[in-house]
Length: 191
Image 1 (spheres, rainbow, N blue to C red):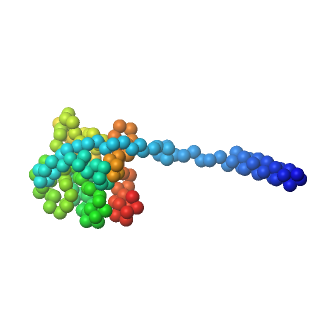
Image 2 (cartoon, rainbow, N blue to C red):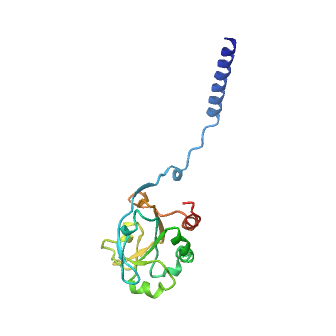
């Protein structure tokens, strides 16, 4: 009986001691970026022509492969994108791991064709104007251009998981924060 009473007193002191310590040392509030949660939703579907004028449908790859969708400014060309250059260099290993790479720009297929020789994955063309439905706009990568009839493309990379879901933030898919690190993790199989 005396042991139980001693154990109860020790437990009570321990609870009060820890409670007092937490009161004197409150947790630091998390930053707002730590509190944001990326929700997964189905990826917006699209059908676009590649550099060889073949129709590429996103839904042909969904539920079968992880997919990287990379948006780039077609006026500057794919060689101007560090992400696309890295994807080009490591494409055989990515393909071996079952990763599909699709790059989307705002230029005509023939313009992509002239620049696409060293790129082993499809360079897709979304040439819709500012007032038209646009894949670039659906993915939140449209920026105003000097010509009000045109749109500029903001460089961004999105990861679609094998189930066909992509992270969302507000009303658009959320781009990958660190695309080069994402590529490395896909290469090492840690994704």
